[in-house]
Each structure stands twice: as structure tokens, then as C-alpha cells.
Length: 110
Image 1 (cartoon, helix red, strand yellow):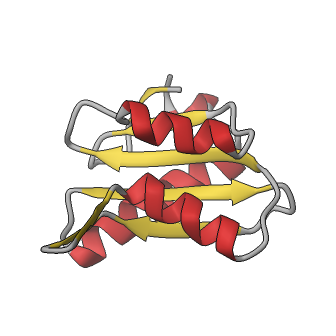
Image 2 (cartoon, one colour):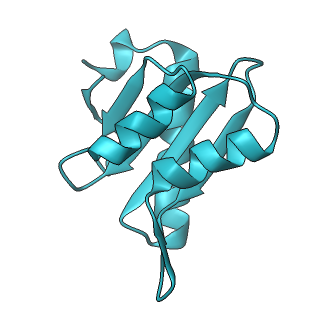
Image 3 (cartoon, helix red, strand yellow):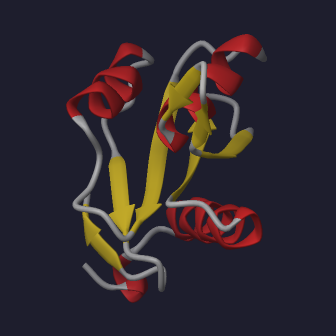
């Protein structure tokens, strides 16, 4: 899948996830879009007492802001892709589209 084939709104969440990752210098950046079109952007959290993936943080932000479902989610990572827990978190919110891109923003899978 190339950037040219992406819906502009899906491309937007990849760009936001990529920007968050670069800004914070983290391994992952993620963004999710809820049923009203609001977006939530996050990076992974690694503390001695708490470790969350970027997708887990973004989903939690959406839920805590009152989102009822997700239209799409994006993960930008140099790693292999979303963990099973990441995929479950997106599905728990009804998300069916999970975009994965490399650090340069090039989509790898959806």
C-alpha cells in the first residue's frame, strides 16, 4: 500500500503518529480516530512502574475522553508491528482498520 492509495484521513493519523514519535524520540508513535473524527496521539510509555505501548496509550486517551468506538488506528514503529495486546485494544473499541508504517511514514500493512 502506498501513500497515494490511502484515504486522506488515514494518512493524517499516520503523519500525526510519526510526528509524535519523532518529537518524543520514542520507539513508537500512534494515533487513533474515534467515531466523531476526533484524533488522539500518543507515544509509548516506559517507566519503572508502568509500560504501555503507543497504541494502548492512544486507545486509553480516546476511552477516557468519551469515545465510543474507533474508525481507524495507526502505529508508526521501526519494530515488526503491533503486538497482540495492541490489536485487542483497537478491536475492543470496534476498530477494524489498523495501519502500520515505518519511521519514514511508509505504510507496511493495514
